[in-house]
Length: 380
Image (cartoon, rainbow, N blue to C red; front, side):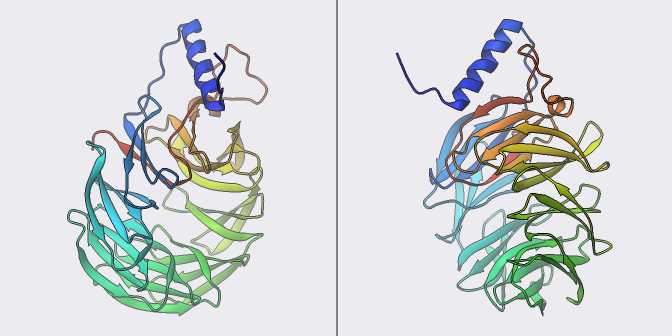
């Protein structure tokens, strides 16, 4: 009987047939869950990474935004509903929920996972929320609507709609001060040691750096494109990788020297980024929405380590904690492409025969219009 034969069906069927024919031993999988906030399904899609398949969708009262792991807990936001939901990672169900005083703009888990730091607008404020009860322990009024946020163990920094950057003490629960940078910040990041703030200016080819303690302006760094995403290297943030819209480059910034070090060509329209240490190599993984690839760079040599064609519209990329797999989430369909990292790092384009293992291992579906994703170990 005729039927629809999709890309993920073809890949899954081919992989299964190849393994059966060759009698290969099954590759080890990761014991954990992949949680994806699906706007299309209005819920949290959950996939079993030991089987690479979706097992359920946890319904939410409104469209989800962020997935936030915090120690032994997992949280999801419904921004327009002003709602934070705790997800039980054992029962795979909503365990608790709490309304916030305003529309949720951004959420971060405090180091250690005891608190959630929630930025809201209408009213503009920062809330410190106990993860165990979802009760607000402190609220700090902000001078204007927050756009983006980053935190350390003691400090929250927020770019605001009125071109200011606010600094909030998380230990004292009060506003430390604000700095007018003259530009609207679209993305903000704290250097891993917490001593400087980096702000990507919206619509401007510039990164502004500030002193985290005083808020004083340190530098304005021109780059070749308008920055939209930051990603720090694993070596205490000695390098910061920057992607943006309308360009095929990744900028490498030295946040301790306040200078732009280099730019790399990263296929077409780089989007999601993550770093990992695999086979004793420091790697930067970049998805490319224009060319539908996953590009992997060796950070130490600044050279191309591998490039794998994913197809579709690749968005976020996550690496399983054991370093075995890269998971690339399609921004439209919610299909997750699974890449074997060991094979990808030893793969030469054009060298594969029908008998060889391919880097793109399989594809499975989660939920449409994914907003964010997180890997959660099964043992929690």
